[in-house]
Amino acid sequence: MSTLLTASELVAAYSTGEISPVEATEAALRSIEERDRECNAFCLVDPEVAREGAKASETRWREGNPIGSLDGVPTSIKDMFLTQGWPTLRGSTCVDRDQPWEVDSPVTARLRENGLVLLGKTTTPELAWKGVTDNPLTGVTRNPWNPAKTPGGSSGGSGAAVAAGMGELSVGTDGGGSVRIPASFCGIVGLKPTYGRIPLWPASPFGALSHAGPMARSVSDVALLLDVLALPDHRDPNALEPPAGAYREAVRRDVRGLYAAFSPTLGWARVDPEVREIVTSAVAALDEAGLRVEEADPGFADPREAFDVLWSTGAAQWLDTFPAGCEAKVDPGLRQVWEQGKTYSAADYLAANAERAALGIRMGEFHTRYDVLITPTVAVPPFEAGFDVPPGSGMSGWPDWTPFTYPFNMTQQPAISVPAGKTADGLPVGLQIVGPRHSDDLVLAVARLFEEVRPWPTDRPAGR
Image (cartoon, rainbow, N blue to C red; front, top):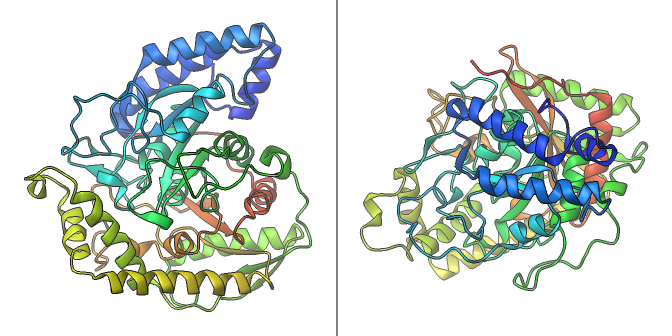
């Protein structure tokens, strides 16, 4: 069978008996065998566990008793989530593989409870610290559209897996754009929901910046997966109450006539001309479809300095728990962030957190005038794999080329990336839709409208 089906199409085929979860899982495992040597998207694949899960799902469907709306769908999970029976190494050589792995994170637990088939774990840069995906443990992860290019990060393994047909769904983490960046670079859909919408445990050292997010090849699939992941878990004190309705229904909401601001630069970002042209054309199509779009900036300056304080102090807190001698073993760029984080005081951290809160208030006011904000997802197209910044760009770090993502981790707003088009070189470019806090349903509905207006090609990258 084809691995081009969406999760929604797959479940519909399960219900009629046209396809079984066993067939879908075997197809996904074959795709991993064929594609992953090139992409390096998985750090762990467990065919035995996947096949056991698929057989159990097949029995439930045959008996007419699926335990969830995505029962039997092949899925991967980023190697940042604790997973019973599998090591969670987080891309680091400093984590001991030989220890008990007895607990599921909330994300993993919800996937199991709803019958999704876990294929394995996807790659991440060490501790998910940057916007591309390579680490000292598993090497470089590559973009299935062109393996010479990066898939982005830090959920680059998940982005590459979904784009290449190595499973219909994945779950990533996003502390500064890490779901949306690979969604943009890999031509899939990735949602960073409102902070607390998906429970996290253990708590991220990156604090209120860190979210979990669903990744898929369609907006409807992302909504279905969010329904699974959005249930509360007592281990996360910041988890929100259960959603009032199902996202799989809310995604169909008619949003024509609502007001959208299009900000191609946020007023200060430098954007690749081809990216800007592709996104501007995509926004024009949304306007023609009935969304009332006008160009407007939200009116804040680059919050990079405050973000760097919050990010680096979180990294330093985490790395300080590592065994002695790890300084020489971690990613050199992460070591610099570690050292930077140690230079800040408690007063510096509190000042940065106050700026984060002020930014959230400003965006709250902005959304009294505009229902959503639309921007490019990333300021550049996919660049060469193995580099933290585009070679020759003069940039010093990954936030230099992700100006549209990290501000909305600071504000804790929902933000989604959907495919907007391709460059002349055939590489994907994403469009980002940002909504007020707690408006995940609205963001999904606007994304669904865009998907209808500009359908993404049904082919998947063939590799080279």
